[in-house]
Amino acid sequence: MNETDEMLLARTAMGDREAFKSLYLSLSPKIFPVLMQLMHDRQLAEDLLQDTFVRIWEQASRYDLNKSGAYTWSYTIARHLALDNLRRSSKRRTEQFTGAEIELEVMESKMFSSSSHTQGKVDNCLSQLKGDQRQAVILSYCYGYEQRELVGVLSHPLGTIKSWLRRGMEFMQQCVSH
Image (cartoon, rainbow, N blue to C red; front, top):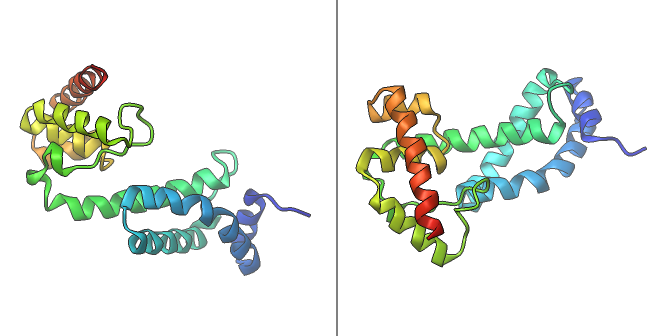
């Protein structure tokens, strides 16, 4: 019988090491490329993959089939670990961000494609945004900062942050498309 990832996760929650091994073999080839895309560092992505599966082992009993599939739940753990890592490493450098220093590779957005021509356009458009607004856009869309986190990092009210992001992304979409 072929078990689904959800069944394997349920067995993992009961401490079944064989189920955990099968879950790892099933999900790690799907999660590792996501971590590589986010981290751009093989060793760091491998470390985060291991951390992800340690967390899955420890928290498997919290998994709720009614809320998400096993992959989605596991992917969320991996993504949060990666974003936490990026935040820790980038918080020290937030004042130094410029468009040319940041690689914008956001999978969800069409405007951030990987071609060097488009990347040049993105860099050019980012350089046209004013300092704090540029930082807000970069930190939000590249590093996964939430709006409330940006309030503390950039020392501006939530309404200002929301306006900067909305207007900044509207500008970026228009600028990159021309």
